[in-house]
Image 1: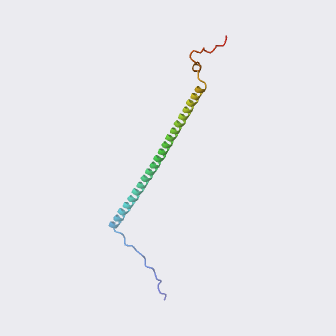
Image 2: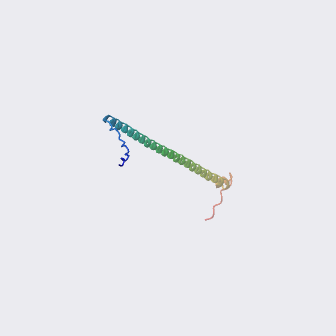
Image 3: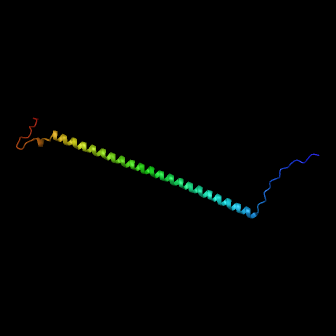
Length: 113
């Protein structure tokens, strides 16, 4: 006679009660809700971060624009000062005829027609 083969016992779980199933369902929904809230918080923080970065870039561009405008004004003022300086030097080197004449001196002779 052959001895019967050893059979591993079947592992059985007790059938959950309706109350346990409802509790598991509540826990699952609560965790799902927490995950969704965390996802929304993360998305909001990312959006805030992008907004702050955009503000920083805009502020940097505004500063650069102000610096560029200030440099342009400075260069323009230098050019105007150089033009005035050259004009003053030209006037000193070649004063108009009225300034060359001395009081009582005859006016310059006109060319014959």
